[in-house]
Picture (cartoon, helix red, strand yellow):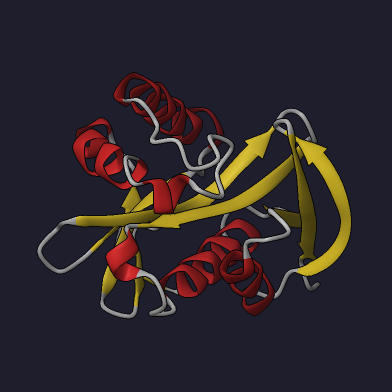
Length: 174
């Protein structure tokens, strides 16, 4: 993880990760409008309505303000948002989850894996978290690969957000 003078800005393989902001609404709405992208989200392939995207975005921005960590926008060299990745505290589990999503045109390039690794490193080294978890639907092979390549280990199956999901975790190496 390389960082600039602002420790919340991360650099990964030609992309910049910066805290997500309200001005990312159009880009996030476009990503979540694609059934291929939302297929493995709780909406199960149904495009996410713009008003729900806006609520999620406000939640992501407030999370940064409240906790000092959160979801980053992944932007290319033209400042176009191509995806998101980051850390989110889950009240339901009292744990911090790494989550990610990319526009379909950017799948298969290792971006999600590098972003997940950078997010986890930030969580352990900057925020001083002891543990990070990730969840994936059993049929989401690509997400399972990202999670495993990011160093998380499968622990169990859980029921969350009305879905059966695989639960992975990684603890900080001391």
